Image (cartoon, rainbow, N blue to C red; front, side, top):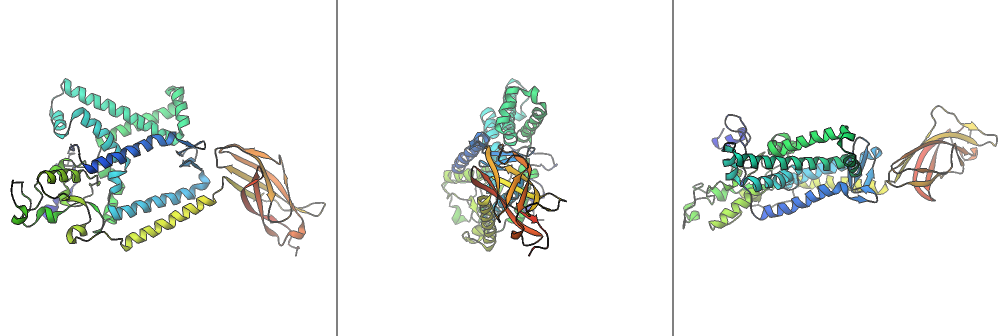
Length: 471
Protein backbone atom coordinates (compact mmCIF):
# COMPACT_ATOMS: atom_id res chain seq x y z
CA UNK A 1 0.00 0.00 0.00
CA UNK A 2 1.12 3.56 -0.73
CA UNK A 3 2.64 5.25 2.33
CA UNK A 4 0.24 8.13 1.82
CA UNK A 5 -2.68 5.72 2.39
CA UNK A 6 -1.34 4.14 5.60
CA UNK A 7 -3.52 6.45 7.68
CA UNK A 8 -6.49 4.35 6.54
CA UNK A 9 -5.11 1.28 8.34
CA UNK A 10 -6.30 2.60 11.71
CA UNK A 11 -8.61 5.23 13.13
CA UNK A 12 -7.30 8.69 13.88
CA UNK A 13 -7.60 8.41 17.66
CA UNK A 14 -5.19 5.48 18.03
CA UNK A 15 -1.42 5.76 18.27
CA UNK A 16 1.10 3.35 16.71
CA UNK A 17 0.82 1.01 19.71
CA UNK A 18 -2.96 0.77 19.37
CA UNK A 19 -3.62 2.85 22.48
CA UNK A 20 -6.08 5.72 22.55
CA UNK A 21 -4.61 9.04 21.55
CA UNK A 22 -6.56 11.72 23.41
CA UNK A 23 -7.84 14.47 21.11
CA UNK A 24 -7.31 18.09 22.17
CA UNK A 25 -9.12 20.11 19.50
CA UNK A 26 -8.37 23.81 19.30
CA UNK A 27 -11.38 26.05 19.87
CA UNK A 28 -12.81 26.84 16.41
CA UNK A 29 -13.51 30.41 15.36
CA UNK A 30 -15.15 31.47 12.12
CA UNK A 31 -18.28 31.97 10.07
CA UNK A 32 -19.33 28.33 9.90
CA UNK A 33 -18.79 27.88 13.64
CA UNK A 34 -20.99 30.93 14.30
CA UNK A 35 -23.82 29.48 12.18
CA UNK A 36 -23.38 26.08 13.81
CA UNK A 37 -23.84 27.73 17.19
CA UNK A 38 -27.11 29.32 16.05
CA UNK A 39 -28.40 25.97 14.75
CA UNK A 40 -27.20 24.09 17.83
CA UNK A 41 -28.74 26.47 20.36
CA UNK A 42 -32.05 26.38 18.50
CA UNK A 43 -32.03 22.56 18.50
CA UNK A 44 -31.01 22.45 22.18
CA UNK A 45 -33.85 24.82 23.05
CA UNK A 46 -36.25 22.62 21.09
CA UNK A 47 -34.92 19.43 22.73
CA UNK A 48 -35.30 20.77 26.28
CA UNK A 49 -38.65 22.51 25.65
CA UNK A 50 -40.50 19.90 23.54
CA UNK A 51 -41.59 17.57 26.39
CA UNK A 52 -42.98 20.54 28.35
CA UNK A 53 -45.00 22.08 25.48
CA UNK A 54 -48.63 21.00 25.19
CA UNK A 55 -51.07 21.31 22.29
CA UNK A 56 -54.75 20.67 23.10
CA UNK A 57 -53.63 18.96 26.30
CA UNK A 58 -51.22 16.67 24.46
CA UNK A 59 -47.49 16.73 25.13
CA UNK A 60 -45.70 17.97 22.00
CA UNK A 61 -43.41 14.91 21.85
CA UNK A 62 -43.95 11.76 23.90
CA UNK A 63 -42.55 8.26 23.38
CA UNK A 64 -44.01 6.23 26.24
CA UNK A 65 -43.02 2.76 25.11
CA UNK A 66 -44.10 0.97 28.30
CA UNK A 67 -47.68 2.28 28.19
CA UNK A 68 -47.65 2.42 24.38
CA UNK A 69 -48.60 6.09 24.23
CA UNK A 70 -47.01 8.34 21.64
CA UNK A 71 -47.48 12.01 20.84
CA UNK A 72 -45.82 13.47 17.75
CA UNK A 73 -46.15 17.23 17.25
CA UNK A 74 -49.12 17.20 19.62
CA UNK A 75 -51.01 14.42 17.81
CA UNK A 76 -51.60 11.27 19.92
CA UNK A 77 -50.76 7.89 18.39
CA UNK A 78 -51.49 4.41 19.68
CA UNK A 79 -50.29 0.85 18.94
CA UNK A 80 -53.04 0.65 16.33
CA UNK A 81 -51.25 3.47 14.49
CA UNK A 82 -47.95 1.59 14.39
CA UNK A 83 -48.07 1.45 10.59
CA UNK A 84 -47.86 5.28 10.57
CA UNK A 85 -44.77 5.14 12.77
CA UNK A 86 -43.16 2.62 10.42
CA UNK A 87 -43.82 4.85 7.40
CA UNK A 88 -42.44 7.88 9.30
CA UNK A 89 -39.29 5.90 10.15
CA UNK A 90 -38.88 4.90 6.50
CA UNK A 91 -39.21 8.55 5.50
CA UNK A 92 -36.49 9.44 8.00
CA UNK A 93 -34.15 6.75 6.66
CA UNK A 94 -34.70 7.76 3.02
CA UNK A 95 -34.31 11.45 3.93
CA UNK A 96 -30.96 10.82 5.66
CA UNK A 97 -29.81 8.61 2.78
CA UNK A 98 -30.76 11.33 0.27
CA UNK A 99 -28.85 14.02 2.13
CA UNK A 100 -25.87 11.72 2.68
CA UNK A 101 -25.64 10.99 -1.05
CA UNK A 102 -25.90 14.71 -1.81
CA UNK A 103 -24.06 16.35 1.10
CA UNK A 104 -22.17 13.66 3.00
CA UNK A 105 -22.33 13.66 6.80
CA UNK A 106 -23.82 17.15 7.08
CA UNK A 107 -26.33 15.67 9.55
CA UNK A 108 -23.49 14.63 11.87
CA UNK A 109 -21.82 18.03 11.92
CA UNK A 110 -24.89 20.23 12.22
CA UNK A 111 -27.85 18.29 13.68
CA UNK A 112 -26.68 15.14 15.49
CA UNK A 113 -27.36 15.42 19.28
CA UNK A 114 -24.02 13.78 20.05
CA UNK A 115 -22.09 16.47 18.13
CA UNK A 116 -24.22 19.32 19.48
CA UNK A 117 -23.87 18.28 23.12
CA UNK A 118 -20.19 17.46 22.76
CA UNK A 119 -19.03 20.52 20.81
CA UNK A 120 -21.49 23.17 21.91
CA UNK A 121 -22.03 22.26 25.55
CA UNK A 122 -19.38 20.04 27.14
CA UNK A 123 -16.44 21.17 25.02
CA UNK A 124 -17.26 24.86 25.55
CA UNK A 125 -17.40 24.28 29.31
CA UNK A 126 -14.00 22.61 29.04
CA UNK A 127 -12.60 25.60 27.15
CA UNK A 128 -13.98 27.98 29.79
CA UNK A 129 -12.44 26.05 32.71
CA UNK A 130 -9.24 24.52 31.34
CA UNK A 131 -8.46 26.86 28.44
CA UNK A 132 -7.70 26.13 24.80
CA UNK A 133 -5.78 23.22 23.27
CA UNK A 134 -2.30 24.13 24.57
CA UNK A 135 -3.44 24.80 28.13
CA UNK A 136 -5.40 21.53 28.24
CA UNK A 137 -2.36 19.53 27.12
CA UNK A 138 -0.15 21.20 29.73
CA UNK A 139 -2.78 20.71 32.45
CA UNK A 140 -3.09 16.98 31.73
CA UNK A 141 0.70 16.58 31.84
CA UNK A 142 1.02 18.56 35.07
CA UNK A 143 1.13 16.83 38.48
CA UNK A 144 -2.01 16.72 40.62
CA UNK A 145 -1.64 20.03 42.42
CA UNK A 146 -4.30 22.34 43.84
CA UNK A 147 -4.93 24.12 40.52
CA UNK A 148 -5.38 20.88 38.56
CA UNK A 149 -7.66 19.33 41.19
CA UNK A 150 -9.80 22.48 41.28
CA UNK A 151 -10.17 22.72 37.50
CA UNK A 152 -10.71 19.03 36.86
CA UNK A 153 -13.06 18.66 39.84
CA UNK A 154 -15.14 21.68 38.80
CA UNK A 155 -15.39 20.40 35.23
CA UNK A 156 -16.39 16.89 36.28
CA UNK A 157 -19.05 18.16 38.72
CA UNK A 158 -20.58 20.43 36.04
CA UNK A 159 -20.48 17.54 33.54
CA UNK A 160 -22.30 15.31 36.05
CA UNK A 161 -24.98 17.95 36.71
CA UNK A 162 -25.61 18.50 33.00
CA UNK A 163 -25.70 14.73 32.41
CA UNK A 164 -28.33 14.44 35.15
CA UNK A 165 -30.41 17.22 33.54
CA UNK A 166 -30.18 15.52 30.13
CA UNK A 167 -31.30 12.22 31.68
CA UNK A 168 -34.31 13.96 33.25
CA UNK A 169 -35.30 15.56 29.95
CA UNK A 170 -35.11 12.19 28.19
CA UNK A 171 -37.21 10.72 31.00
CA UNK A 172 -39.85 13.40 30.31
CA UNK A 173 -39.97 12.16 26.71
CA UNK A 174 -40.55 8.60 27.95
CA UNK A 175 -43.01 8.98 30.83
CA UNK A 176 -44.40 12.51 30.16
CA UNK A 177 -43.45 15.79 31.81
CA UNK A 178 -46.47 15.59 34.16
CA UNK A 179 -45.25 12.27 35.55
CA UNK A 180 -41.71 13.65 35.86
CA UNK A 181 -42.91 16.59 37.96
CA UNK A 182 -44.94 14.17 40.08
CA UNK A 183 -41.85 12.02 40.67
CA UNK A 184 -39.79 15.08 41.59
CA UNK A 185 -42.48 16.27 44.03
CA UNK A 186 -42.85 12.87 45.68
CA UNK A 187 -39.09 12.39 45.99
CA UNK A 188 -36.71 9.67 44.77
CA UNK A 189 -37.54 7.24 47.59
CA UNK A 190 -41.14 6.93 46.33
CA UNK A 191 -40.04 5.95 42.83
CA UNK A 192 -36.83 3.96 43.18
CA UNK A 193 -37.75 1.84 40.16
CA UNK A 194 -37.46 4.96 38.02
CA UNK A 195 -34.79 6.85 39.96
CA UNK A 196 -32.17 4.07 39.74
CA UNK A 197 -32.42 3.78 35.91
CA UNK A 198 -32.26 7.60 35.83
CA UNK A 199 -28.92 7.48 37.67
CA UNK A 200 -27.71 4.75 35.30
CA UNK A 201 -28.52 6.89 32.26
CA UNK A 202 -26.85 9.87 33.95
CA UNK A 203 -23.72 7.73 34.26
CA UNK A 204 -24.00 6.70 30.59
CA UNK A 205 -24.26 10.32 29.43
CA UNK A 206 -21.39 11.33 31.70
CA UNK A 207 -19.23 8.49 30.37
CA UNK A 208 -19.98 9.46 26.75
CA UNK A 209 -19.29 13.18 27.08
CA UNK A 210 -16.49 13.10 29.65
CA UNK A 211 -14.46 10.16 28.32
CA UNK A 212 -15.81 8.27 25.27
CA UNK A 213 -16.47 11.46 23.28
CA UNK A 214 -15.55 11.27 19.57
CA UNK A 215 -15.32 7.48 19.82
CA UNK A 216 -19.13 7.41 19.60
CA UNK A 217 -18.94 8.85 16.06
CA UNK A 218 -15.95 6.74 15.04
CA UNK A 219 -16.67 3.36 16.65
CA UNK A 220 -20.25 3.13 17.92
CA UNK A 221 -22.35 5.04 15.39
CA UNK A 222 -23.43 2.87 12.41
CA UNK A 223 -24.24 5.91 10.29
CA UNK A 224 -20.55 6.62 9.66
CA UNK A 225 -20.17 3.17 8.12
CA UNK A 226 -22.86 4.03 5.58
CA UNK A 227 -20.56 6.56 3.94
CA UNK A 228 -18.78 3.85 2.00
CA UNK A 229 -22.07 2.71 0.47
CA UNK A 230 -23.74 6.08 -0.03
CA UNK A 231 -21.01 8.57 -0.94
CA UNK A 232 -19.70 8.88 -4.47
CA UNK A 233 -17.52 11.33 -6.42
CA UNK A 234 -20.49 13.67 -6.84
CA UNK A 235 -21.29 13.95 -3.10
CA UNK A 236 -20.53 17.32 -1.54
CA UNK A 237 -18.42 16.90 1.59
CA UNK A 238 -15.90 18.90 3.58
CA UNK A 239 -12.92 18.45 1.28
CA UNK A 240 -9.35 19.67 0.84
CA UNK A 241 -8.57 21.01 -2.64
CA UNK A 242 -5.40 18.98 -3.22
CA UNK A 243 -5.06 20.38 -6.76
CA UNK A 244 -4.63 23.87 -5.43
CA UNK A 245 -3.01 22.92 -2.14
CA UNK A 246 -0.25 20.72 -3.58
CA UNK A 247 0.39 21.82 -7.22
CA UNK A 248 3.62 20.53 -8.78
CA UNK A 249 5.97 21.23 -5.87
CA UNK A 250 3.72 20.16 -3.01
CA UNK A 251 3.32 21.97 0.31
CA UNK A 252 5.80 24.48 1.69
CA UNK A 253 5.92 26.70 4.73
CA UNK A 254 4.91 30.29 4.15
CA UNK A 255 7.60 32.75 3.05
CA UNK A 256 6.89 36.44 2.82
CA UNK A 257 6.66 37.96 -0.70
CA UNK A 258 6.84 34.50 -2.28
CA UNK A 259 4.96 33.98 -5.57
CA UNK A 260 3.80 30.45 -4.83
CA UNK A 261 1.80 30.03 -8.05
CA UNK A 262 4.78 31.00 -10.22
CA UNK A 263 7.06 28.58 -8.37
CA UNK A 264 4.49 25.76 -8.63
CA UNK A 265 4.14 25.60 -4.86
CA UNK A 266 0.71 24.71 -3.44
CA UNK A 267 -1.33 27.17 -1.36
CA UNK A 268 -1.22 24.86 1.68
CA UNK A 269 1.44 26.31 4.02
CA UNK A 270 1.48 23.14 6.17
CA UNK A 271 0.44 25.01 9.32
CA UNK A 272 -1.59 22.00 10.60
CA UNK A 273 -4.32 24.25 11.97
CA UNK A 274 -6.94 22.09 10.21
CA UNK A 275 -5.62 19.11 12.18
CA UNK A 276 -5.50 20.95 15.52
CA UNK A 277 -9.15 22.02 15.36
CA UNK A 278 -10.50 18.63 14.24
CA UNK A 279 -12.67 17.07 17.00
CA UNK A 280 -11.99 13.55 15.70
CA UNK A 281 -8.22 14.00 15.29
CA UNK A 282 -7.88 13.51 11.52
CA UNK A 283 -5.97 15.34 8.81
CA UNK A 284 -8.56 16.41 6.23
CA UNK A 285 -5.75 16.79 3.67
CA UNK A 286 -5.63 12.99 3.44
CA UNK A 287 -9.05 12.98 1.79
CA UNK A 288 -12.51 11.76 2.81
CA UNK A 289 -12.31 9.60 5.93
CA UNK A 290 -14.72 7.62 8.05
CA UNK A 291 -13.91 9.76 11.12
CA UNK A 292 -14.88 13.08 9.47
CA UNK A 293 -18.23 14.38 10.73
CA UNK A 294 -18.32 17.41 8.40
CA UNK A 295 -18.25 19.86 11.32
CA UNK A 296 -16.54 22.59 9.19
CA UNK A 297 -14.02 23.46 11.94
CA UNK A 298 -11.16 22.85 9.47
CA UNK A 299 -12.82 25.16 6.91
CA UNK A 300 -12.89 28.04 9.41
CA UNK A 301 -9.31 27.39 10.52
CA UNK A 302 -7.95 27.21 6.96
CA UNK A 303 -9.89 30.28 5.78
CA UNK A 304 -8.46 32.25 8.69
CA UNK A 305 -4.90 31.24 7.76
CA UNK A 306 -5.43 31.91 4.05
CA UNK A 307 -6.74 35.36 4.89
CA UNK A 308 -3.73 36.11 7.11
CA UNK A 309 -1.22 35.14 4.39
CA UNK A 310 -3.18 36.92 1.64
CA UNK A 311 -4.16 33.80 -0.28
CA UNK A 312 -7.68 32.95 -1.56
CA UNK A 313 -9.98 31.25 0.93
CA UNK A 314 -11.67 27.94 0.14
CA UNK A 315 -8.64 25.64 0.17
CA UNK A 316 -10.83 23.48 2.43
CA UNK A 317 -14.50 23.84 1.56
CA UNK A 318 -17.73 22.07 0.82
CA UNK A 319 -17.00 20.38 -2.51
CA UNK A 320 -17.30 17.09 -4.34
CA UNK A 321 -14.38 15.05 -5.65
CA UNK A 322 -15.51 15.82 -9.20
CA UNK A 323 -15.63 19.53 -8.39
CA UNK A 324 -12.01 19.45 -7.25
CA UNK A 325 -10.76 17.24 -10.05
CA UNK A 326 -12.81 18.57 -12.98
CA UNK A 327 -14.32 21.83 -11.65
CA UNK A 328 -17.77 20.35 -12.40
CA UNK A 329 -20.80 21.80 -10.63
CA UNK A 330 -23.29 19.91 -8.49
CA UNK A 331 -25.86 17.96 -10.52
CA UNK A 332 -29.13 16.35 -9.56
CA UNK A 333 -28.12 12.83 -10.56
CA UNK A 334 -30.49 9.93 -11.39
CA UNK A 335 -29.55 8.41 -8.05
CA UNK A 336 -30.71 11.54 -6.22
CA UNK A 337 -33.85 11.64 -8.33
CA UNK A 338 -34.63 8.06 -7.32
CA UNK A 339 -34.25 8.80 -3.60
CA UNK A 340 -36.33 11.97 -4.01
CA UNK A 341 -39.12 10.09 -5.79
CA UNK A 342 -39.27 7.46 -3.03
CA UNK A 343 -39.26 10.23 -0.41
CA UNK A 344 -42.11 12.11 -2.11
CA UNK A 345 -44.19 8.93 -2.46
CA UNK A 346 -43.73 7.93 1.19
CA UNK A 347 -44.41 11.47 2.42
CA UNK A 348 -47.58 11.65 0.30
CA UNK A 349 -48.70 8.28 1.66
CA UNK A 350 -48.10 9.38 5.26
CA UNK A 351 -49.95 12.68 4.77
CA UNK A 352 -52.86 10.87 3.15
CA UNK A 353 -53.11 8.33 5.97
CA UNK A 354 -52.93 11.11 8.57
CA UNK A 355 -55.76 12.99 6.88
CA UNK A 356 -58.08 9.97 6.92
CA UNK A 357 -57.07 8.92 10.44
CA UNK A 358 -60.00 9.19 12.86
CA UNK A 359 -59.94 10.26 16.51
CA UNK A 360 -61.71 7.05 17.49
CA UNK A 361 -60.94 3.59 16.20
CA UNK A 362 -63.94 1.27 16.10
CA UNK A 363 -63.91 -2.50 15.68
CA UNK A 364 -67.17 -4.46 15.43
CA UNK A 365 -67.06 -8.27 15.14
CA UNK A 366 -69.64 -11.04 15.20
CA UNK A 367 -69.43 -13.06 18.40
CA UNK A 368 -67.42 -16.18 17.44
CA UNK A 369 -69.32 -19.47 17.41
CA UNK A 370 -72.77 -17.84 17.47
CA UNK A 371 -75.34 -18.48 14.71
CA UNK A 372 -78.11 -16.12 13.73
CA UNK A 373 -81.42 -16.11 15.56
CA UNK A 374 -84.84 -15.60 14.00
CA UNK A 375 -87.12 -13.47 16.14
CA UNK A 376 -90.89 -13.82 16.55
CA UNK A 377 -91.46 -10.88 14.19
CA UNK A 378 -89.42 -12.69 11.50
CA UNK A 379 -86.31 -10.47 11.79
CA UNK A 380 -82.85 -12.06 11.80
CA UNK A 381 -80.66 -11.21 14.82
CA UNK A 382 -76.87 -11.44 15.21
CA UNK A 383 -74.83 -10.69 18.32
CA UNK A 384 -71.72 -8.50 17.98
CA UNK A 385 -68.90 -7.29 20.19
CA UNK A 386 -67.44 -3.84 19.82
CA UNK A 387 -64.20 -2.16 20.89
CA UNK A 388 -63.78 1.62 20.75
CA UNK A 389 -60.43 3.34 21.33
CA UNK A 390 -60.37 7.06 22.09
CA UNK A 391 -57.14 8.36 20.51
CA UNK A 392 -57.56 11.86 21.90
CA UNK A 393 -56.84 13.39 25.29
CA UNK A 394 -60.42 14.61 25.70
CA UNK A 395 -63.50 12.87 27.07
CA UNK A 396 -65.96 11.67 24.40
CA UNK A 397 -69.55 11.39 25.53
CA UNK A 398 -72.97 10.59 24.06
CA UNK A 399 -71.43 7.70 22.10
CA UNK A 400 -73.97 5.56 20.23
CA UNK A 401 -74.29 3.36 17.12
CA UNK A 402 -76.38 3.48 13.97
CA UNK A 403 -76.76 0.92 11.19
CA UNK A 404 -75.82 2.67 7.94
CA UNK A 405 -75.77 0.14 5.12
CA UNK A 406 -79.36 -1.14 5.32
CA UNK A 407 -82.52 -0.76 7.41
CA UNK A 408 -82.25 -2.43 10.77
CA UNK A 409 -82.11 -1.92 14.51
CA UNK A 410 -79.19 -1.96 16.98
CA UNK A 411 -80.05 -3.09 20.50
CA UNK A 412 -77.43 -2.48 23.17
CA UNK A 413 -76.88 -5.01 25.94
CA UNK A 414 -76.21 -2.22 28.44
CA UNK A 415 -76.54 1.55 27.94
CA UNK A 416 -77.52 2.96 24.57
CA UNK A 417 -75.38 6.06 25.19
CA UNK A 418 -72.02 5.93 26.95
CA UNK A 419 -68.71 7.82 27.34
CA UNK A 420 -65.07 7.02 26.63
CA UNK A 421 -62.38 8.52 28.86
CA UNK A 422 -59.46 10.34 27.24
CA UNK A 423 -57.03 7.79 25.90
CA UNK A 424 -59.44 5.11 27.09
CA UNK A 425 -61.13 2.07 25.61
CA UNK A 426 -64.73 0.90 25.75
CA UNK A 427 -65.85 -2.66 25.09
CA UNK A 428 -69.32 -4.11 24.92
CA UNK A 429 -71.97 -6.18 23.14
CA UNK A 430 -75.02 -5.37 21.07
CA UNK A 431 -77.56 -7.13 18.81
CA UNK A 432 -78.45 -6.16 15.26
CA UNK A 433 -81.87 -7.11 13.90
CA UNK A 434 -82.57 -6.91 10.14
CA UNK A 435 -85.62 -7.75 8.11
CA UNK A 436 -84.76 -10.85 6.01
CA UNK A 437 -85.99 -9.12 2.86
CA UNK A 438 -82.88 -6.93 2.96
CA UNK A 439 -80.44 -9.85 3.12
CA UNK A 440 -78.83 -11.21 -0.04
CA UNK A 441 -76.81 -14.18 1.22
CA UNK A 442 -75.68 -16.09 4.27
CA UNK A 443 -72.93 -13.47 4.74
CA UNK A 444 -73.88 -9.84 4.28
CA UNK A 445 -71.56 -6.84 4.55
CA UNK A 446 -72.99 -4.22 6.88
CA UNK A 447 -71.63 -0.85 8.04
CA UNK A 448 -72.02 0.49 11.56
CA UNK A 449 -71.54 4.20 12.23
CA UNK A 450 -70.26 5.55 15.55
CA UNK A 451 -71.65 8.90 16.71
CA UNK A 452 -70.66 11.35 19.43
CA UNK A 453 -73.03 14.23 20.13
CA UNK A 454 -74.70 13.66 16.78
CA UNK A 455 -71.41 13.70 14.83
CA UNK A 456 -69.98 10.68 13.01
CA UNK A 457 -66.57 9.86 14.48
CA UNK A 458 -65.87 6.50 12.81
CA UNK A 459 -67.30 3.63 10.75
CA UNK A 460 -66.82 -0.10 11.07
CA UNK A 461 -67.61 -2.85 8.57
CA UNK A 462 -68.56 -6.38 9.63
CA UNK A 463 -70.48 -9.47 8.44
CA UNK A 464 -74.11 -10.25 9.21
CA UNK A 465 -75.15 -13.91 9.01
CA UNK A 466 -78.49 -15.02 7.60
CA UNK A 467 -80.13 -18.16 6.09
CA UNK A 468 -78.99 -19.30 2.66
CA UNK A 469 -82.56 -19.64 1.43
CA UNK A 470 -83.12 -15.92 1.00
CA UNK A 471 -83.13 -14.77 -2.66
